[in-house]
Length: 346
Ligand code: NAD
Image 1 (cartoon, rainbow, N blue to C red):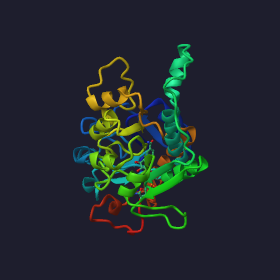
Image 2 (image 1 turned 90 degrees about the horizontal axis):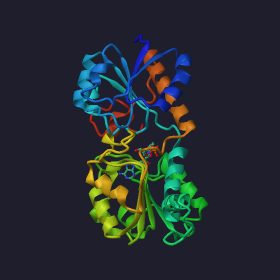
Image 3 (image 1 turned 60 degrees about the horizontal axis):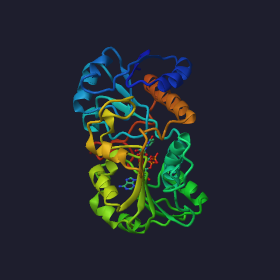
Image 4 (image 1 turned 30 degrees about the horizontal axis):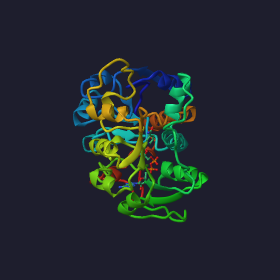
């Protein structure tokens, strides 16, 4: 049995501390909160800890894992669902990796719809206008969502809730998922058909080798002129350069992005007044029909509370030598040494 009392927590924000502090005594853990992100330069800060808590924009590559392992770390507890930032091949047989598979799919699905409504009904522009006592409606025309077709890529937990929300608006749904959900009456089509026939496309699949840049110049060119894209999943699902081009060429009607493929350097930080040295991100932000939020779709009280509780439960299971139900299955990461049931799809 492993005995530990202290947890090393990277990339701490005030809201993380608020919610983890609420639960830590109940679990009997001490947490040392560090502001830096976890990467090969900061991994040394984990010296003397067996357990590290990390997040979506930490760089948990081979070098970072080797340093953590040599410093005695045996568990990385991700306080998120996604795990595309981890080198599992290096971690295998050295460090266990657990995650919070679902903390509030409602939070993310609701944020996706909030972004869509903002873009379509130009709420961001109307808000700024009325603050300046400009009560003109010119340029604020949207369209009814009722009767339009929503293409949903990935019909897992978040995708299915998003579909229910869209159905509440009277929308038609087209879906794509390599593992279709039986019994939901969903109309599954190929990615190509979905691109051709949707008015709006929302991405709810994980970032893998198969999904990297699945939205690119070829798929963008299949879409109807004026299609909207919603991405609350992972930035690299979209080739951002191709996206910016399609927006400039008015092939796309607009995009709402909670994630960006090079977000690590920018998102979650207050860079007010600084120059953003990423021409694609700057270009996207400058477009009137692009709205960017900085990976905040998860940010509800319910989600933060669930994240803290489940992360500490995962750590407790490790400390007490119980099984790790939320360990990330290596099969799902397409690495060969899976010792788990193949059906245990993460
Ligand atoms: P989930 O595992 O329940 O669902 C993912 C679905 O994607 C599954 O049905 C799976 O079969 C499908 N899928 C796998 N490969 C695919 C492919 N090649 N093409 C299309 N679909 C594919 O996950 P979830 O909880 O619904 O989360 C979805 C994604 O949302 C996560 O992977 C994560 O990247 C993202 N997310 C973002 C935030 C945020 O704050 N923005 C928060 C949580 C999760």
